[in-house]
Length: 156
Ligand code: HEC
Image: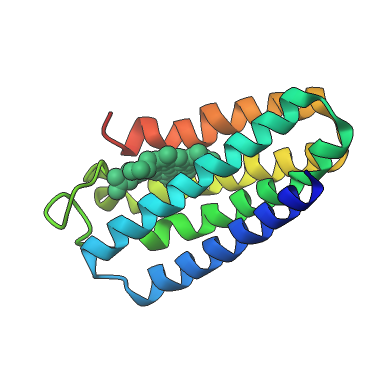
């Protein structure tokens, strides 16, 4: 389990960094950006799933193991805005991204920043193996972080 946790975090962080580099260099290539951001989002979902399983176990060692996955989520929040270049809307490919993202880039970035803040709070609770705090922080991340942005900027 320990090896899985560490390897997962390293993989998640590496993939996020690669995607964020790609996102920056390819800004403007709509279809590729859609593929990349959907991959990043799925990775975020996998990280959240691994964290939730650890929290549910209430095992102190497992909580600590997924701290890195929560830090990766905080890092990945900074990559999100780079993966929505102008032109990567529904005309460029299959996407649930709403046009509001490009009409209100400041609000979109703020949404990503909120996710980053909440993921960092989660990582801190995990670091201290505080299961109750981690559960509350996980709920807030899902509702106001991921959910906050999805509710405003993603088609159902
Ligand atoms: C700042 C905005 C924003 C934040 C924060 C955000 N997402 Fe997303 N997410 C989106 C948008 C927009 C889409 C639709 C992308 C598309 O279809 O091009 C999406 C799509 C997804 C998808 C579907 C991917 C697919 O296969 O098409 C998953 C899963 C997902 N997000 C998970 C998460 C999780 C988990 C978090 C929080 C840890 C999160 N997202 C945070 C904006 C956000």
